[in-house]
Image 1: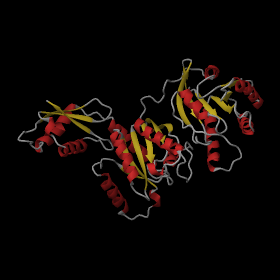
Image 2: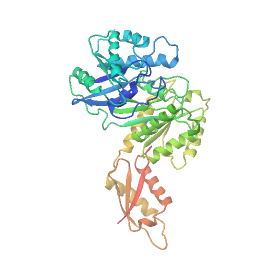
Image 3: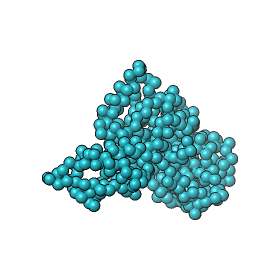
Image 4: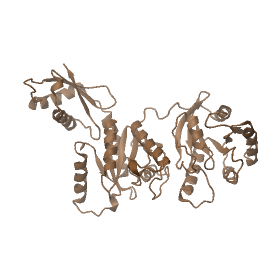
Amino acid sequence: MANIVAIVGRPNVGKSTFFNRLIEERKAIEDNVSGVTRDRHYGHAQWGGKFFSVIDTGGYVIGSDDVYEAEIRKQVKLAIEEANVILLVVDCHDGLTDLDKEFANELRSTQKPIYIVANKADSPEKTLLAAEFYGLGLGDNDVFPIVAVSGSGTGDLLDEVIKNFPDEGEEDPDEGIPKIAILGRPNVGKSSFLNALLGTERSIVTNEAGTTRDAIHTRYKLFGKDFIITDTAGIRKKAKVKEDIEFYSVMRSLRTLEESDVLIIMVDATRGLEAQDINLISLGIKNNKGIMIMVNKWDLIEKDHKTLDKIKKDMLEKLGENRWIPIIFTSVEAKQRIFQAIELAVKVYDNKTRKVATSKLNDKILPEIEKYPPPANKGKYIKIKYITQLPTKNPVFAFFCNLPQYIKEPYTRFLENRLRENFDFEGVPIKITYKKK
């Protein structure tokens, strides 16, 4: 059984700071502006030998017509449904507010254990003032004064929280699971794609660019595969990133890129492959990631029988040497080829982790080398004797030869193309290294 804790409360009480304290890393964006956290997102924590998942949520505001706040309320309710234990965070500096009381009324219907976490109790006076939160009338549970920034007081709270967990939980349930990240410019449909796959509103979606701020991780099972899919904030050119919050959102997206196995680069069909998309692809190749391009909003394009081939040809020309990156045309809105897109991402992961037997490599590639040997250099003839795949996370092939220093880049590209023709490495960067025999 999963042990899950949800952190809830009104805006700007320090929920994300508390979340980061529990999971012991800066995963959620923290800012003094209310409404920074919008979607719910997850981390893993442990206390007293028990492991549990923690859900951070956006600030809950009742009666607001703001499009984001209405969506945040939905996300908070989903988090409460998922959790075993609820931590209601309040603010000792502000004292008991009407928003706290309204939210406490919303929580009364749940039968789950609720703990009141009085944050910012950073002086003896503030710690004493925490007693006023008993006025929320949420059962017999104590109020726990804490300082999320320093961690003061969290030990006593967690001692009580883990009493609700019947088992030890898993240290990191995501360990060893393939990680797929959805990346792209703002407003290309990344969050809508995730929601369509899950059949639930996992990420908040609006027509305004920049809706997603944090990287949203979701565990997903499909086609007999278990993997983690991550929705990220849209990435724009540096010159256009003006807010601090957007800057941190972009940094989170880039960190997600580094931590992922496969990147789905989502492109708007009405705009085509742009410079920023090419930059993301280059960054993915540099980091040895599996890559695919998902062209979304295909339903908005006026088409004839030549349109797809023409657009695909144009994209392949922009990719240049990286034509090994697969392209799929989809419409998230019309639910067109979205599951095929995920199937393709899983296939790219399989290609990335493929190991080719040494005997097969030599049987297939050595005859190709005999037909077209490396060009002689300074009167020296290069002889490649043997090939093997190295035991690395990404496909790396070692070619053993007499004069490795004389092999030039064009011949390396020739060898890469022969490897791709004979073995399926679609969507995966290949590295070739030469060793002296």
